[in-house]
Length: 345
Ligand code: TRP
Image (cartoon, rainbow, N blue to C red; front, side, top):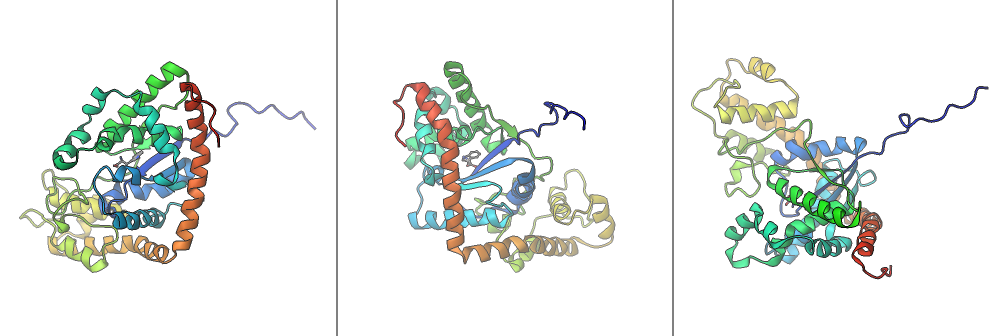
């Protein structure tokens, strides 16, 4: 028998990168969120260590109805499971269940300058939108988000354009802390998914599809009933031409083709060929039906999960326990660095 060869560095399985994302439990995802991001999460679970946090602490920076927030938090948790997140593979928890988030957030706020938080565009926008409630939590929101990310030593954070600045400030705070105390935090990078379509409003196709749109016909919620989905697509705004073809400037039809292609896997050429000689009416009907069918399993999973609150509770309790154990390692290190007496756990 030959001597066993030494395991080389290269043959060692590489540590899976850590991805962390947070979702505010303030409404059902849109088709845009789903096709642009959430649909990929299930696939990502194989290649990364994923963590998903239902950010209910962030949600109260805007006034919420308590009963509704509680209900929506559970629904949001059920929804991410319905979209294919497996709580056995991914760390899936409710932020308020894990006290380390609020604790680290306080420490980080002492390493964040008033001036830099004042420059956050989301703070400025939200202050204008809710001038009657410009609370301090809204101001220090980025510190809480930084805590979410840094506690888990996340390598990657999937972010949309609206959260990019918050990820940048997270990095700034982490660098500042590391410069003072050594390598405490991993520096997170933005994660841009390989696949992910940008879905526009059905009413104003130059605007991104948004769940906060006042016009209900402008967006598809992933829990909309099939007939509602079909109806919304029939009303989708398109131009006055009638040819199903992807062309510069025809934002309405381009958006519908993007959606159809995302749910069927058909290329634009195939779609153009299949719908040659047919009008927008036929195409809108086809897109509506394809989307309704595509979302069927999500809707069914969601309904099933919402009937089994005991199972959901079991999952988020387990998630919170694991999240606490992982995040406490980082928090204890931070507490030691800043000079706190050894915590009693
Ligand atoms: N602030 C994010 C949003 O409103 C949600 C969020 C909270 C988040 N914590 C996070 C996103 C950590 C990424 C990482 O969309």
